[in-house]
Length: 333
Image 1 (tube, rainbow, N blue to C red):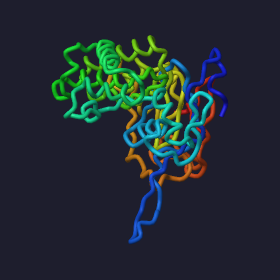
Image 2: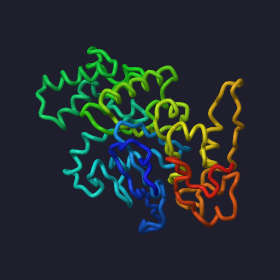
Image 3: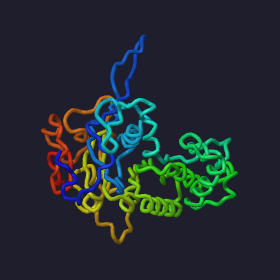
């Protein structure tokens, strides 16, 4: 695959994935032997640059959240390599990986489920510094109070429990925990999908402010293409664990090449006066990732599929400058 960074001004590569796969074994029979695999992520190769926001979109079950969890080591890598900076991290021991915990963090979709309901928020944030620093108790408390202020919360919130906060406030706590160790890379896994629209805007603004202040890189996993358009620099579209299209946000939204991307964009709600794009309705459901179709994984639902699509899987290649797609007929819909 041709390097995506060719037309960029020598950006620094922060995270690099090469042929990343994540399969979940299916066990059956009396002896619980492996009889198959759920192919959640299939041969993902990409680079994430320092200071950018990469949006990852697709239907539920497309593998976007599994990809994020695999990068952070929350899921064991099946095949491929993951590099942070110049260091491959997939084969490091637990002790060796500990230093990367400070550099790579995650903001989860459900802020309440990610917090201990019996633990005060101040103590939950204090644990981060207890585990990873040599700060004194006073230094840790001062750092927690500073974190709370950073995300728009007040000192009196230190002694409150999770149930005493609104959804937006809980997500701010999740953000505070993610940035506590001054990471370089943060994965936002549907970080605003559970919030009201007005609260979403506040949290997105906070994330952008923090990104600019600390030069963070984000992988922003979302099903909300409107949010992705506002927040991200580049977009990766996934289908059935595969990369199907990737480019700058303006190219994806103004000139999508893959029929799946076009179908996703056609579903974005629009005011009636600007409703120029006709809705593309895909027939059928996403195939079973344990038994994906031959050829192009999208051909069973594709409105322009031909015989070649059933037998020959298209390569993920550059069709236009910095615009990649995996389709035999890219841009011909």
